[in-house]
Length: 252
Image 1 (cartoon, rainbow, N blue to C red):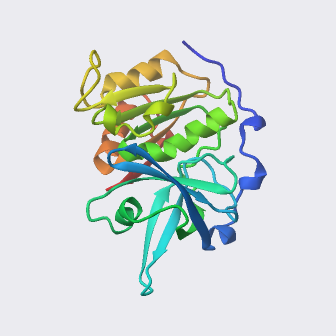
Image 2 (cartoon, rainbow, N blue to C red):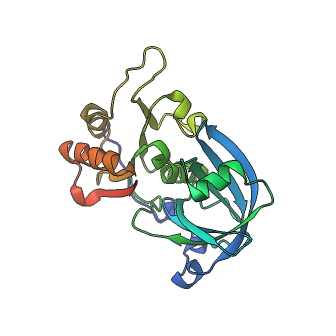
């Protein structure tokens, strides 16, 4: 099936979230207001950040913790919340074994705690909502992609958007309750009855590219570990996706 899509300025994120480099370089205080469990190893942390100037879906921030003795630790984290969630930021963090910052969040942090943040950072992986987007993520790599999905839903955009998300099993699928018709789930170790188990394969990617090809083609966004990002990008190229229209965010 071919879907006609004509870009419109209505899809662009409004100017209020265009952040200057100067503003993004300033540290500001964010207050933890809520903790939501997503999987046994991942939780979402919601912050009130009145001074946050906004972001584009797909961008990340720098977070800084300061101990009583003055020791500081900084980490980059993708932003999960959509731009329209004014004055708030959501981050979804895995509990990394021996992780200095993630360990604090998962074992010590409580509502009312304050951290410092600055950003948003990196425009390369950002999706302004003005072009068809094919999203592929594994594990916590789905976090910046969820910001895109939430933006798409909040604005009720007509621009095509599809997600391929991979997890070891249903219990490790971050944001499991939020996925809709735009999402294809891939389980690599355990799956519900009747659902095949296996690694993200050429058939998954080829099916999406073959079934729906919007005018102008897709902009692909891939996020996951180094190994997953390499694997997924190779599948995209093999299926005919232009190399210069694949954006990759990797970790680990």
